[in-house]
Length: 246
Ligand code: BTN
Image 1 (spheres, protein in one colour):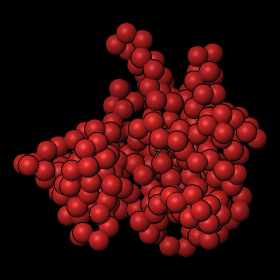
Image 2 (cartoon, rainbow, N blue to C red):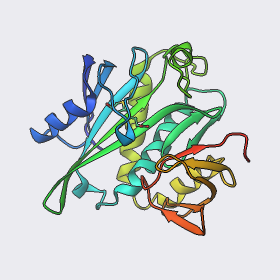
Image 3 (cartoon, rainbow, N blue to C red):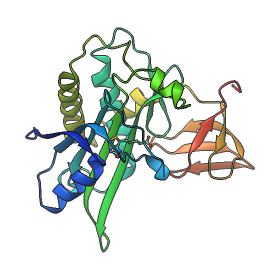
Image 4 (cartoon, rainbow, N blue to C red):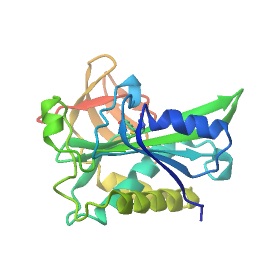
């Protein structure tokens, strides 16, 4: 097991920035930075990430040599499954699902996202910062008012204790990473069962082309039908699901 090293802040620009700073200073594997609120939260594809009070915004420092073996692609999926497993301990129903590659949704609305930032020196991966944003107790109206296809878990969790949930999530993530890659098949199966978008149409955000989602491969790649069949690796394409097109 890893030591849990958690640093809590009331407000930061982004927990990613603090985590990078700490990693450069040599803070240990598994160090966690958590903030009540972020003023400059960031998401994938340079998106801005809304991070009001009530959410769970954190980053973890990971050093790849210990267990990841440069298989960065798998880590996003692994961690999103860890988060779902931990969250569901505090929920009555198993109602969370994944949107490839690692968004977590509730009734088709995003409730959590994961951001990976790796730092290389020459060809060698030095460290990875995993950022997770979970709209835990944010008022769902916040997302309506801001015109976002997102919601929170406010009305679905049996506890209001954010740190109890954070601890459970960190524990699950670190255990899952420790058992990687032996646990990959189990992890993938869990993910696959919660991926409802096979045979849905989606728009590729890069070029707005309509594609059909055919499947996800065992290594977490997505297979799309678009002028022939194409396979995209993790992070290789961003999809907006056409909800009524199934
Ligand atoms: C996504 O686009 O889906 C990923 C969102 C990741 C947001 C989290 S919140 C904690 C950490 N700090 C950030 O600025 N971003 C990540």
